[in-house]
Image (cartoon, rainbow, N blue to C red; front, top):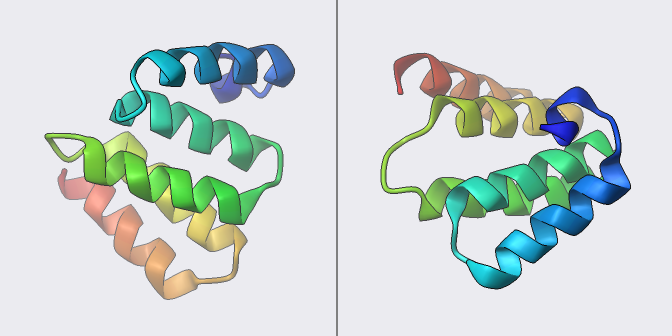
Length: 91
């Protein structure tokens, strides 16, 4: 929740990493870590984590796809951003 609000990012990172230590393949936790890194401006790292999150989730998640699209946009990959934003609308 803190990463969504862009507050207390250091504390959020600690909690997310603890959760991932317990469940390293949890797609929701990977999404949270990716979004946290997005908020920190670490876009390449965020993208890798968000793509892992999408792969780990059993069902397509529009929020994860939106996060991936936002991140692709920040690294100037507009076509990929549009692809994932469109996926977020139909997931």
